[in-house]
Length: 262
Image 1 (cartoon, one colour):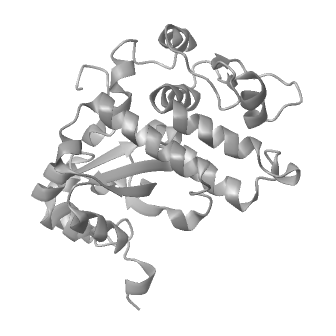
Image 2 (spheres, rainbow, N blue to C red; image 1 turned 180 degrees about the vertical axis):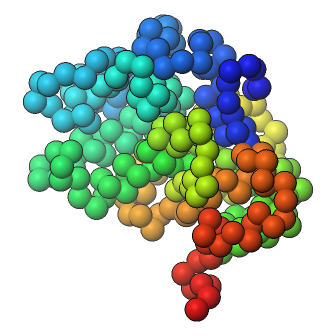
């Protein structure tokens, strides 16, 4: 999607495109109500989802979603707007995330005392991406922090065999104004060539199911589950990525701990 007024650097806003093609590109809560029409989105507790103004009712953010299906959403706020769009794009995953938060021990249920596991879930909720590739060697380059090899030397293969699906709503907000050092927390999946040829709707549904199953199974509860991914290295996110020397910036494209120079 590349319509006027809709920034999508490197195509990273593509997962939201089926929704954003239906409403004006602005953080309007009325648009969210419109997008909910005809959709049966529910939490894992069975509550029908709604986007409501924040309220002081004694319930923590995640507990209110679990108990009432109410997602606190500020007016004219891109962060909350993108969060709502992710709920509509990945409903099973967001419901599973909420269920994990709601089932946290009593001492870690408040927003001030998340605990290590809830922190990991929150980081993915805010800044997560799903990277799929039909060429396992590309995923290996991500694991080994070999950024120039991935983004420049394997650029042709990257465009053919790898896709990046942003999940984190904070990352979507940051992509409105991409900046040096913008990175995300990635989950990596190997898929088939046939998977990459499926429609966007089918791909999103499959990712949603994968994430929901892993969350329900207790995965993604530690920071080690994620791989850092410098989004500014993906072709098209910034014009600077069209030059090989761009990837020599070791502050932005950092080597792994085991390969850092002295």
